[in-house]
Length: 441
Image (cartoon, rainbow, N blue to C red; front, top):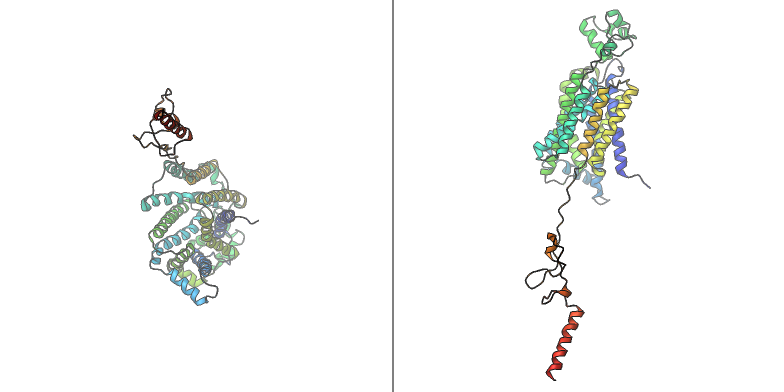
């Protein structure tokens, strides 16, 4: 007895969504590795490289199943190259660039928001996807879905509303808090060897001290995090809808894995040239490509790379409702894990907003009730004389209970397309005998 692939893919997607956000968030706030923090541009590039390797392997396996077992490897690779680089494959460069932008903004968002808040706020991609579907694909949304989108915006707004509790300024005064702001240079140097290990290597300028402090003790900027989430959700919605439009307009019969290979291949160019070279090229050339890496960073990259593969499995073995349900469960898991691992303080606003978002997600993903078609009463067999029914009387439709249905046995002078009954045949035979008897009387 094997476990259905639908359940396996949904459980895997739930665990991946929950673990990815938690590990990504911790990788951006964990202690420095050799005095440095890893560059997010290198993580995004490696994510696409690993995803490309996985999709290439699966796509090559799919192609090999359609060919004879004795097919040489050169033929397999030639068939894969021809399938990937088709006439319209260049169109996927646009959604690939948008997905790369989305992955880069995710790192900025988790660096400025806690894991639970990011997970809830990131559900805005449902709104952007729905709006782009209406604009680009001409789809129409039911009233239920529009209500769900409005509720989703309200829920995210409640979650992002800053708390007016005066105790929120307490972490700035508590020396044991992660958000403690020292008031003098002596207090700054006394932070667990921070001054000796890092400040001694730099000139004693205010700018250098501020940069070292922000590296070792990253601070959250909710405005930057929210803006990064909004832009990332917009890029995700546009990329998904544009990708769907390309698939519908294309005449190619490429498989889903071949399409993922195309997306990963075209994502390498913006990830490398814009992210690695243009954005962080100077620092990478100075400190190295893998500067600040450890097993936590590699785990975050692996989880992010496997996300696209798991979503592809869910598309094959599960439906969209189940996928959204798995996403909702991952929100709850991320919330509980944030409270346990990151000392996240839940407020009444956050709980209410999260509940609204979960309900809106369920409402949007639930199927609309389809009205049953009207019942068409098939007309009974009609007679060959006058076109009037012999088995059914229309007067019964109009509530006239005084008339009874006319049956073939009691309808005189009407012949049907059916053979005559034995009773009527017997009566006809009997009448001919009477005539014959009278003729010879």
